[in-house]
Length: 304
Image (cartoon, rainbow, N blue to C red):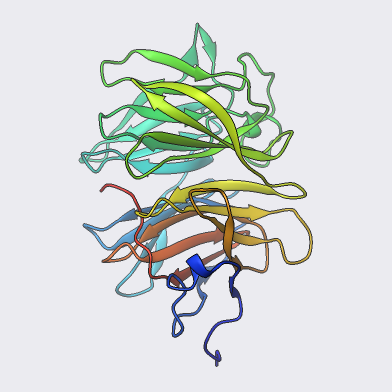
């Protein structure tokens, strides 16, 4: 039995007080993976897809029954997932070193697998803007080890790319060590990008005609790291976090001015997050081998 309020949900600033629900607790939904990542919500089907990278599969959790099944295996060690504005699944595949789209009838379309004639490193995380542009990071973790892909040499820089609906490819930024999670502000005027290399921070950019300007550090995450990130409709940034020692693992919530206003404490590093549920007020968290959730009084800034 859990005693309310759940002490694992910590208020660090008064702005987080109305977001924390006194009668909601961190829930363990499923365990049995190896390294879970890439949660994406399908509200039209009331299910969540998420990646189990080392086990080479995408799993499906059904909200109404709690059942978990294999959605796709093999998955080419898929990591990050999102949906486009037509509701199609967009995925970053480590092993195949590509970004793909799953069509409504189930066929898979390769959106990008090379840059300037050379294979991508290992695409990691992905978001879709309202104009249909697909933005993704390519840090190459999937070619650093066989555990999440296969060992290979880097043939491209660790870029962040944008795929235009016309098919044109742009490198939007190229000076990250290990670009990882990324997300837009609710009005898409800002883009946040995590660097899980050195110096372990989150940067934010103004988005002007699909170009990135006014580069600045939003928050430094040292001694740990952020990973997957999302914003809510009020502009707060929610970051999966880990590798920082006792009391660090979980989700860190930052106000738009970068103040750390709250934490969700979890038993292991949180690789990625997304909002879902009927009202998009349920936070899903992939944590090591386990899927967790938490209802909050915040609404995810995501479409669909």
